Structures are given as structure tokens and as C-alpha cells.
Image (tube, rainbow, N blue to C red; front, side, top):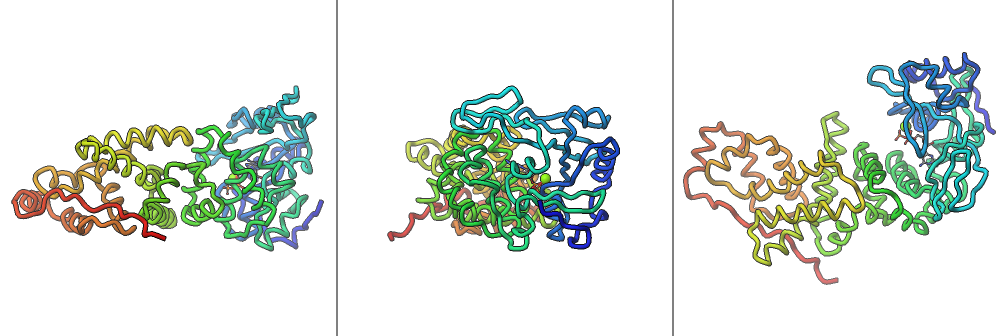
Length: 428
Ligand code: ATP
Ligand code: MG
């Protein structure tokens, strides 16, 4: 174990949340070990401000629960304790240990369980700091900071990889991805977020194990989807997912559509860029918007098909939205609070083609107008031809209601225009 003394690293207690310091000092006072671990140590060593503060300890979840009134045990697959201080939550995790029985299909009395494909279904076997370190995902995420004597503990070469800006999975990549395929997504997420390279074996394993992502429940994939795209580095993450061909485990229909619709990727990219920008400016963002972009090419293609079969445009889009959402839900369980606004953004794309009458004048006042209008601009930015619709709404929405009514009410305008939407990919 490599111990880095206080004068050889840049972590200062000043940059650690008071609540985290409190939790650690309380645990130490009770005779337990307690370390800051994971993303917080990594980000502090990189000179950045951590998003949250995770703590690792040899106290069991029950021990921790008893020490802090403001705490509760959560999780089943992986039991941890949340200690709450106002809006801040400090996550306290008991050191994980080795499993007695590593055979596939095994379930030992100690609290670990594996599926017959080797997937770790439960990991509640407790152990030492050294054992805990090797069970973490990446070397740069397995550094421990002791706020009592200011030392950093490195058991897996994490500090060296930090210096070399390398994302490296701990242990044998294939085995670690088999235990938990989500680690592949985490590798890409951190490579994008930190702008690190991916170590060769770590990357090679992804190619070999990617299919295991099919085993991951749709609810967990949705949680991971949020972390991938709502962390401020969506565009860089998208590139990594495409480069390592993992996007298709999250959005298979979208990936198929990308092969035939040349506007699909530019639209998705534009949505990611705009989300990243907004997060950077501390503006509110919603997964509904990114989802709308990711699934629009699929919904649009389906609506086109239905229209060709004779459905009216609004009805076609309505059915297409339903179909697209239920197909996507096979892989990613999108909560209704996101799928509903996403659907509305799509359906508004049709309403926005109508520049005439009271309806157009009133549309501007609707709750979903802003998101739908932003989405229209993204489609144009991505190269879709809409007949200057975006510019028209930009001016129109600024007018007072009375003038909007006058403007939209009279004839002369082109009314609903059916824009030329899709261009086939040029022959190679
Ligand atoms: P972030 O900045 O996104 O919070 P983080 O590194 O803290 O990054 P978390 O998802 O909060 O990431 O996880 C905390 C720590 O738990 C990680 O640093 C890692 O050590 C460990 N960990 C999380 N998920 C896994 C996993 N699937 N397999 C192994 N270890 C994991
Ligand atoms: Mg964290």
C-alpha cells in the first residue's frame, strides 16, 4: 500500500464539506476507520471541486445507522447508509471484502450473490481497506483520504494513473465487466468527464463484454443514462459511447436510425451541446429534452411510415410517439414525468408548422412552447430544412398578443407547411 503523506499531495480539509468531516471524525472517535473515498478524493487531487463526498469505513451499516440519528440504510444489492445534513447527503459505505464463493450461480450466506452469468447481484460481504480498494471500479476512484492524519492511501496505483491521466479498471477487465457490466459505461463516463485516455486493456475489454449490458435491468440503465448525459459532459460522453459502440445498448432504435438518417446524429449532438452549455451556466435542464432529441429520429421515421399509410400527420405523430416510447422502454425505463414532456415536445413540432390563426397566436402562451421552440431551433441547427420556421417564431413570440392575432389571423401567410425533412445518405 502506497501512503502519501500530507506534504506530498494537494488535498486540504478546507475543500472538504463540513458534514463529511463531521461524519468521519465521529466514526474515528468511536474507534472505527473512516476515509474520504471515490470521486471526492480524485477530484480534490485534480484541483477540482467534488460533486459529493463519499466515505468508506469498517463500521457496518447498522453501526453507522446507530451513530447518526439523521441516517438511513438504503440499497439491497449494495447496502449503504445515507447521512443527511439539510440538503446534503453523505454516503457512507462499509469496506467490501472478498467473496467466499466466486462460482457463478452462487449465493453465500455472507451476503453476496451472483447470477449464473457471473453478474454480481448482491455485494454485502464486508472486509478491509485493501480488499475494498480492489473491489472498486477504477484506479483513480480507489484513493482514500484520512482526514485525521491527512494521508492518502493508494493500493491500486491510482495516483500514478491520475498523473498520467488514464482511466484504468482495477483487476482483470473481463472479469470486472462480467461482475458488473455498468462499469463499462462508467469507464466511458469518467474518460469523457475527466478528459482522460482509456488504458488499452480497459478499452479492449469493453469490445469483448459490451453484450453483457443486455443483462442490466432497464431501471438501472436509466439511472446510468442520467449520470452519462446530465453531468455537464454529454457531448464528450456521446462521442465515447459511439467510439466504443455502447450507445446501441441504451438506444438501439436510434442507432439503427442513425445509419439511414443523416440528420439524426447532428440533432442529438446539438441537444447534448446545448444541455452541457446550460449546465455550465447553472441553468435548469431536463432529461426530457435530451431524450426528445435521442428518440426524435425514431419517432419521426415511424410517423412518416404511418403517414404514408394514410394517417393524418397529428394522429401519425401521436401513435409514433407511443410506439417509440414503448420500444425504448424495453431497454431504458423512462419515467412518465420525462416521457410525457418529451412527447409533448414532439407533438408541438407539428403545431409549430401552423403559422396561422388564433391557435398559432395562443401557442406562444402554452407551457411547453419554450422547450418545443428550442427543439425546433436544434433541428434547424442540425441541418433540417423547415422553411425558416424558427426565425418566424423567434420574431412572432416577441409580439404582444393583439399583434400576434393580427399577424396570424390574416391570410397571405403560407399556413401549415410540410417541410422537407429527411434526406437519404449520399451513395458511398
Ligand atoms: P461522481 O463524481 O460521478 O460522483 P464517483 O467516483 O464518486 O463520481 P459514484 O457513482 O458516486 O462515483 O461512486 C462512488 C464510488 O463507488 C466510486 O468512486 C467507485 O469507487 C465506487 N463504485 C461506484 N460504482 C461502482 C461499480 N459499479 N463497481 C465498482 N465500484 C463502484
Ligand atoms: Mg460520488
